[in-house]
Length: 310
Image (cartoon, rainbow, N blue to C red; front, side, top):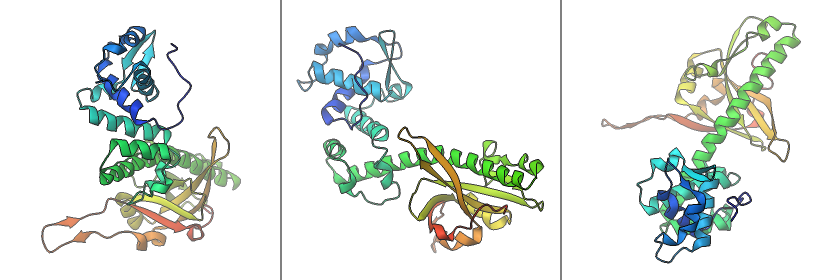
């Protein structure tokens, strides 16, 4: 039997996930011979739930999720698999379910990243069926979806955020070079590469010699509403630093293979968004709540055009 199948594109069913969870403890750092393992599937105690075919499908799921790797005819456990080697079967099922969602549900799952409830009509049937099988309790099911969605959103923000910073640096250099200030263009610096606590990402001087500290926020939204996260540290820096500004970049996918282009769409001063920031909550006792990060959404027309350097 061929070890590899065509790439899986849909959420697995509960039978495949359960089979993968049964096989999980077999794989080690030392490796197991793939042919020998397949010939011994019938010895794995599954109380009659799994046959040869379903166990093989479970093995394929572990491969596609990167939890085991194949080298020279042997299968080796990934460190992520070894980290949870001793967990109970149900926990293995939940880990596999989350990993499957993070791998194959990247189109619809991020839409719940800022939600407080799950709109089940947006969830494809195969994912709904798997989740209903894994979690009988609807509350746990919803909590699982929302937590997974925020993980996808955080990974996407990190990826496109880097692209946005590169685009802003390039746009600043283009702007300054267009004004025959190649010397200033060469001084534009992506501060975030060496310091992610400064409260801004890009440093530049304009033609008048004024400093600009630009906090870059990148979005893939194609609507007229721009959303981004702002940390408490960024807000404090913006409040106290007259050189600070938010520069918004938009990334647009331009081809079927995921190629994207990123452009600057405008900028904001701290005074443009300070009224949207949350407040800390302090009671009459020793208890209090202090905000650390917030999501800000503004209509695109509120953005100032171009760059702060203009």
